[in-house]
Length: 140
Image (cartoon, rainbow, N blue to C red):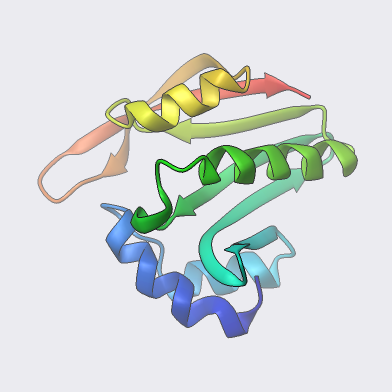
């Protein structure tokens, strides 16, 4: 991902997330040197992600697949790529947070060996409420 991708990314972010990241959030991630990716299928962008790596740990901050590309295994391919990048970069643990209501994502993560290690109460903002986050981890 580069700054040239940001208008495309933020245009889709609000469609994909109840509490979307702002353009500034993505700019900050790029400027801080986070691992930011855009996934393509046949030269068409279909997803994006942001991963923070600190020492031997990686933390998935955002992973998004366009609705038109969901259910086709693209999220699995993208996650496999991100796990391999983290491992190759020296990480031996990979963390993430996920909404308990996001059962497809939880199934994807569990299929890659992630296990629940905790909960963050009221982590996610919603229009009229808050939702906990399940904290998950996998050893690389």
